[in-house]
Image (tube, rainbow, N blue to C red):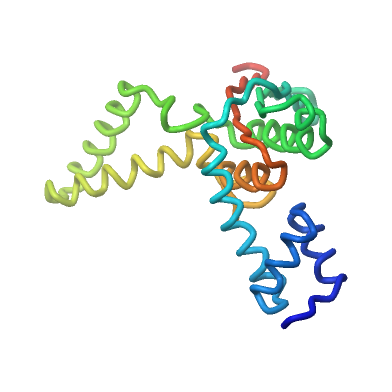
Amino acid sequence: MSEIPAKLVQELRGRTGVGMMECKRALQEANGDVEEAVKLLRKSGAAKAEKRSGRATGEGRIASYIHAGDKIGVLVELNCETDFVARTEQFVKLGRDIAMHVAASNPRFVSRDEVDEAVLAQEREIYRALALKDGKPPAVVEKMVEGRVEKFYQDACLLEQPFVKNPDLTIKKLLEEAIATMGENIQVRRFVRLSIGE
């Protein structure tokens, strides 16, 4: 498909937030298939995010979310490279979405790097004891333990959790898409979740 209708380009731009020329190129590569073009843009977004991941993020904002009923409140420090991006509507919305996600999913850590070795050792011990109790052979036990540790990471680490508004995306992928769209490195530095009675 050589000539891409402007309507398709607009539709893709509305869905992804990526620039017009990049949307047009993706649609040409996908022969006018919008779904395929979305996948191509996601892949290129992940590649761009990887390139930008080492850049300093000295700007940003504190995003907040108070859940209906005022029983749960969240603050998230979301960082980027420039004050210009920190003030954009898209960045503000991203911060709110992540704060809302933290309220709903209650992660314990931002990423795997923050998980204390003592916590991991305790989790492994529990999983190992449960597998041995079921009478599994040692080789199977270790595989089961590692599988459950992976599941622990997905449950406990913000970046690995499925985004509550779109479970097809993890928070890490959501950030990668934002990096591709906004053109800057973006990181969740830290968060705090307060809940009445906890």
